[in-house]
Length: 151
Image (cartoon, rainbow, N blue to C red):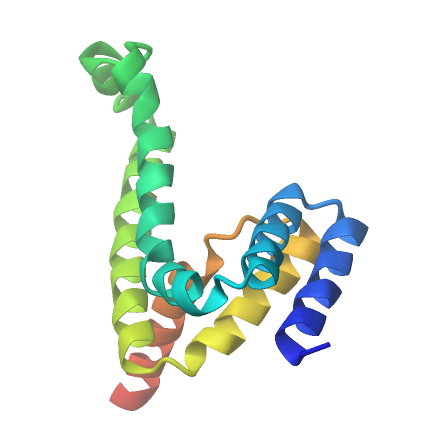
């Protein structure tokens, strides 16, 4: 058995132990791609485009209430009358800016991907986190690295 399959099986076991369906599905899909023999063609595409696809799917999910009519201008204006909405607005801006720097870091320093991916896997499998971590994690890492370089 080769190392990638063994590693994925170990992560699959972690996924089952943590009862994390997203991690289980992701690993099963990756194992299926490898077992069918499409890994040389498909995995590079997933690796290079997957984050963008994921961001697109998340964006669609976030915008779905607008498309369905559940959220309109009235709700937007009404929500901005509370402090928590302004905190959410600022948080959204902050996270988007941090994530932008994460893309830069991952593009310029690809070896960081392994550490970030492992951190995300640990958080998802052991702490029931959500797998948006690599991009945000890279953004935070970029910010910390730049701060350290500055001082």
